[in-house]
Length: 212
Image (cartoon, rainbow, N blue to C red; front, side, top):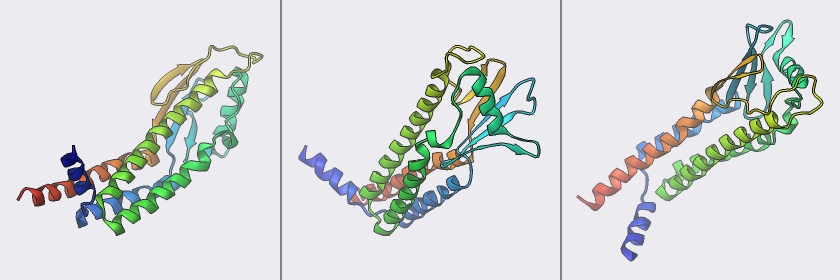
């Protein structure tokens, strides 16, 4: 047992090499687009809206597709009212308060890893970011569930409780709904992969030093 602990301590104290530091730096820069591009896109099609109503979900706001004659978010909320779903308003999304903050914290911690160059700091960052990503996905799904199940029983149009799709396509009443990750989420998804590759490269160098 003591030998295992010593080996683990040796691994966590391993300095990460320049290749790994460069990968961590690139991973940090990959998070910057999450402040400018949506994390998720939802599009609703119907006979009334054959061109589709678009909802863009950013890390800090909701935004409907816009044209000279309409705002898609307002149209979506008007339709939601008929089926008893409460309107989509930014104040209901507490995630908008903490997601940008956490992403900024991860960027700063990544810079710290680049400067200090220790495996233990990189492992901590990987675990933290992975937990943040999984929790964010759960929070998004939970929000979709609440919106589709907390319906006003006095609504003009009665529909059974539902959960809007998180991935892919779903038919809801007379609408075809498509929901997919957007550019911001793809940028976030590659970040832990960069961290893993950085750990693997430095672990490989550590293993060679111990087994010449």
